[in-house]
Length: 345
Image (cartoon, rainbow, N blue to C red; front, side, top):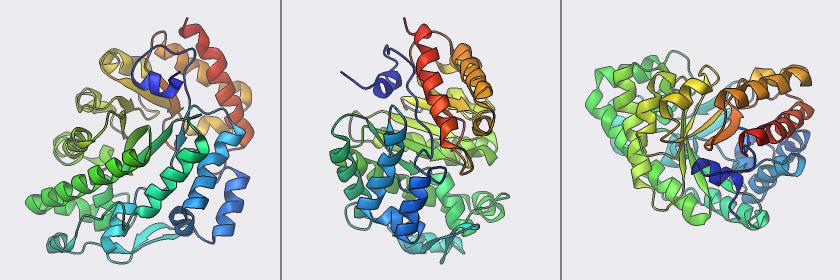
């Protein structure tokens, strides 16, 4: 019997709405914090397949999630390109060698997923073995635009001064960078698929900071190219944070599912694109800080807004935050499974 999550992505009937969380393996779990302490640092955790497997499986031992997601980071590709990634506690990701000038693009190469990124594919194979077919596994990568912002800014940013200066001041070079990253992401996701993932997701964290024209050209077009280049019949999800203006264009990219942030009304999204693709989302993560009765109320609201019919994967509108109590997650998952059954009769 096909898993609920995969059926929902294909817009096929399910007995209840499947649920998983972005960042479901992470700092809100005490067992994760213990494993990270044992690893010593975040990158060691990511680059040690046995530890990545351990933390991928931890939330499944606590909650009846309908999918697991590979524990990794979106910045593995630029790290493998030689930019020297480090994750500083309280600061976030930093690159030792950011892209200073457009000419720096010429020195970048596409990393071999089974060499420079073999720790990721090894983790996928190990996780799949441990899952034993019980739960589907999601692989993922960052979008070319999002990766480019980190590579040019040298880390996380909110204004994107350097990245946008490249985009508008050196568009031909920036387009070459996007083409290079699109090919790297395609090869990376295909390697994850070959290793066994059941679905893939593209995280376009910073697509929403672009103008409509820039989004179409420098964010969505490379993601659509990636979707076209995937080598197997594995469903893909595109999530653009802040992308509510462009749902129709995202749905036309060829992906199976569109991720929604919490600013989008899911009933409106269903009316606009629900006949074409599955919808994933979209509870505000902040709701999980509220009393359980409020969590249940908000879960019910989203389920009611989506209504009857296939094609809904319940999730947050962005990643779960470290301060959330596991009991809140348990209440949310239980409510999704229990309350959604009425919509799938």
